[in-house]
Image 1: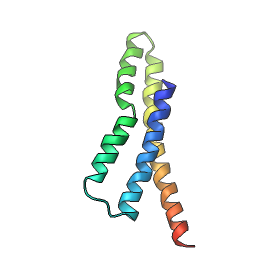
Image 2: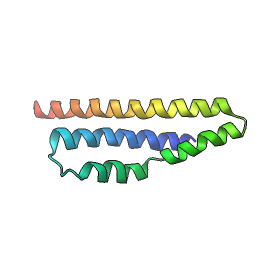
Image 3: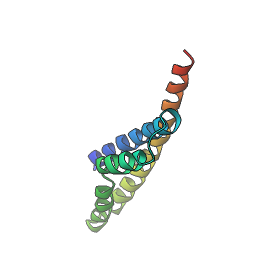
Image 4: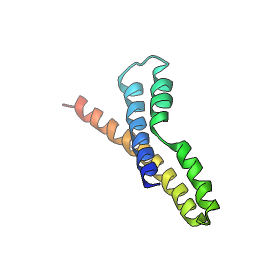
Length: 98
């Protein structure tokens, strides 16, 4: 489950960087976002595995672990996107100010 958490967090960070690049820097074709954001990165992240892991933990008598995994993954994913967007925008602003 730690691997699932790590992969989902990294994938969400990449999505954050990608969304800034295609909205603030690059005038991308309208299909780039769904192709890369949903297709490629959706395949990279393992939220489907995450969704299967939670009921398995509960069924195995480990509901607290399941709840912890549920909470940690959601918080880590949201934090990764937010942080990646903020850092990417700051780096882009810094590069334009040179």
